[in-house]
Length: 368
Image 1 (tube, rainbow, N blue to C red):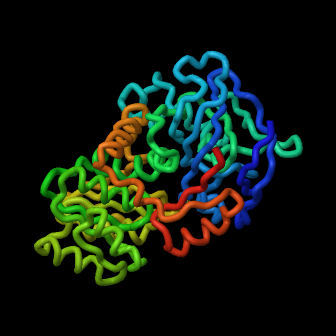
Image 2: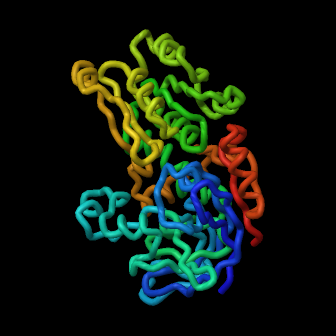
Image 3: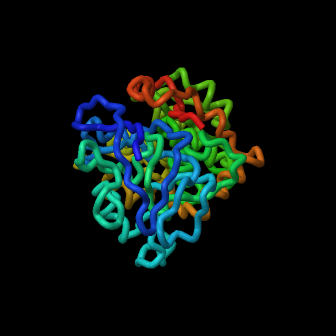
């Protein structure tokens, strides 16, 4: 079948919308008609070269839609199911899956980074040549074939745009707070970065009962929005940010700091902003090959804990429906994360506005 898809042919872009051939789902795979796909900085890392990935690549990893067909051996999904896409499928049997870390599944690690299905081949082609699936999805597309493990059924009453965000930004940000950091009620949390992941971390800190939630960002136009979503304070990014955080936390620093940008300098600022005995959570994806100065002498003497948080330490089959239920109960105000929607042909404009700090999260929407 044919499908219009956002494709990156070379580092530096632009992103082209092209008509690809999409093969039918094979054993263990599912055809999904995409209804919404979030515009996330991680896809831009392919454009900038910060993330190395086989090209040409079908972009998009934060999607939701409906199941159109299932391949042989798929018993967990039915045609018509509303699903949020999980970009870290898990086999359920490897060491990490059996130790409650399915997002680190070793069976799927190599195929996902190769941009293929489990058999080592992609389902997209252009003029007979392969087009690789970013994060095993490539969901800036009208249709996509994905592993069955990448489909998490949700209540169809959850809007597709919200279900898409649950599949990445919300899971990553809320999960960094609830799963990775395990923030305690009454504590202080400083979140660096007010994009989709950072604002989701704010929502997670509010759920956890944090008493002080500080957001640091260079885009001061976001202050009013993050404060209305549960942050208690907004601090402009810059040299004075650490002092401002300490002033708001009795001179000590925050109990927890969350880095949601993916820049070494910001990761280092998170270490400085955490109090002695505090926890630093690195949730942003920094560029491959970069390094961060996290001095062992300081970490040891001040008993600080540094944790990586990949996909919010997610267990998607458990966590996606939980987050969706919180949204439906009014405990997660996810509608307000969506600043603007775009059509697929407007994808380059969507990324320009994201890079300009004009949105919390934007979403590509498709015709039903």
